[in-house]
Image 1 (cartoon, rainbow, N blue to C red):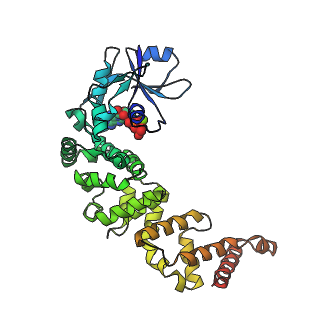
Image 2 (cartoon, rainbow, N blue to C red):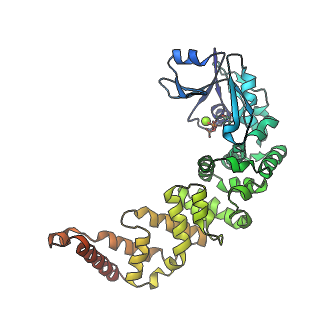
Image 3 (spheres, rainbow, N blue to C red):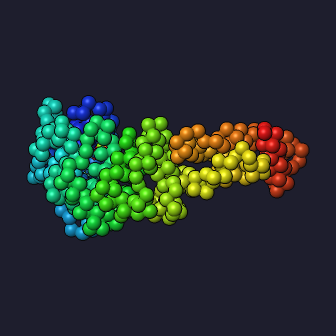
Length: 363
Ligand code: ATP
Ligand code: MG
């Protein structure tokens, strides 16, 4: 059997980028041989194994055929007779379809190296259209490598357009969509991800609420969020802000994690109130900050202020007052009240009073 390094590790080494995880392909071996060597299968009927020590993924060379909708509609054919070239042919992009043998020799049947040099994201074969996830993957790679000058090849974008128009994207599960979206939003040029999805019509399928509102201004906010290395909830909340549609249905449909959904909703509901923080009464401030769950989740207020600042294109007027009030609330200590014998509801009420006073005193 022969083992080759494949995919991202080969690509990123040629680009001179750091390589974190390595994918391997094994040619001329059976699942039984792999297990006999100590490799652990990742699933019962998927020809991928984990190395007993490194934990790297080793996949048996395979071909794929589509026989139904979505990801489940794939059949794999893995056998010792499948060649390296056949395995590389099922991959999404030419730059992802290169392999390296144990001597560091490059195997590049689909001109991945040429496309790397020309900075082109190009599909390997027409079978690209068999997996709608590839639309998201290509857009994500475009977001990752845009700063190096990469763009999507016109024929590839055309295939993505056809895939989007076919409605096949609807067959993707929320989990797989969100995994791609969340990874793409954390890339260096997340706005390029949305641009590419918009250009091929996928945005209208995946986030129809956003598609009519996507434009240069929103793209700029997202680009600045990335330049500031803001965390995912900030980027997500900025993306969805001010669509004229509630964010909750979008978040539920995509099964967005709690922190992303919470921040998008806080921005939707309280941006206006927060802006007036300096003129709010202590009771209103305490109530507002309790919506932020500021005692248990102090980072949420900071994320909110980061998003608000990005959306305002400048300093957020209420920021200092909100931080000051939050600090005052956080500084209230329950211990003296407990020592005085307060408990249960009475303790809750007394704490609330103490927080109101503390916020009032910082004015
Ligand atoms: P990353 O740096 O994000 O890990 P990667 O290229 O290694 O990028 P993986 O998701 O780890 O991406 O997949 C490894 C390789 O498997 C890819 O380079 C590609 O050749 C192939 N691949 C993965 N997913 C698909 C897919 N949906 N369709 C076609 N080929 C795929
Ligand atoms: Mg990888």
